[in-house]
View 1 (cartoon, rainbow, N blue to C red):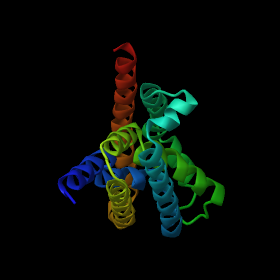
View 2 (cartoon, rainbow, N blue to C red; view 1 turned 135 degrees about the horizontal axis):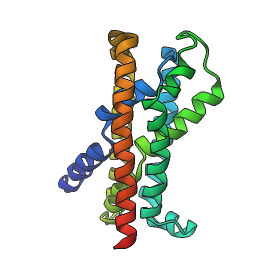
View 3 (cartoon, one colour; view 1 turned 180 degrees about the vertical axis):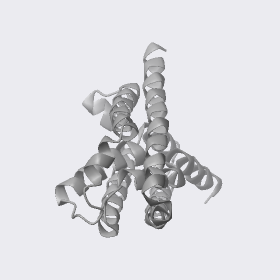
View 4 (cartoon, rainbow, N blue to C red; view 1 turned 60 degrees about the vertical axis):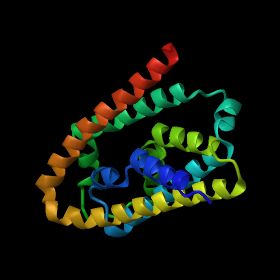
Amino acid sequence: MDFEPLINAFVTLLVTVDPIGLAPIFMALTTGMSRASRIQVAFRGVIIGACILIVFALVGMAVLDLLGITMPAFRIAGGLLLFWLAFEMVYGKRIERKQESTDRSVSLDEIKHMAVFPLAIPLIAGPGAISATVLLASETTSILQHAALIGVIVSIMLLCMLTFTLADRVDRFLGETGKMVLTRLLGVLLAALSVQFVADGIIAFAA
């Protein structure tokens, strides 16, 4: 078996998913949660993200075609949702809700919702990762290669889980002031990223 496509697939998904880049964002999103709740959010988000990417690896554009959804439309929708989240982070709305007590219990519904959005979608399994997965899947020519691609996706998800777990340790060193600064900074970066998603979608529509 030729390992070059496998290596290319790993590098491509590593860059598009960017587990290391997601770690501080995950830390900011889960401000005020206990370590156990953070692990629950991370585990659910990684599992859901992995399932989404694996589904697209298996059926590719057929899913979007079946629903009548184009990739540009997906980019625009994901960008708008991400911008709403960035707005909350910049103006401290999320911190206000999370800082009632750092030891308070987090409801199971909240954990489930945060794991789905924005962690799994669009941060882990965003338009870029989905597009890359569909493209890589279209280049596979055998069942073995398809299985190898799924293995690459699983390995990237394991890296995400690892970085999310380590992010909790970094959180203890930042303190409240550091977390507030980081949350607002990441909110600005997320806003820029969301605008880029929308702009890419609009350009693709116009092309």
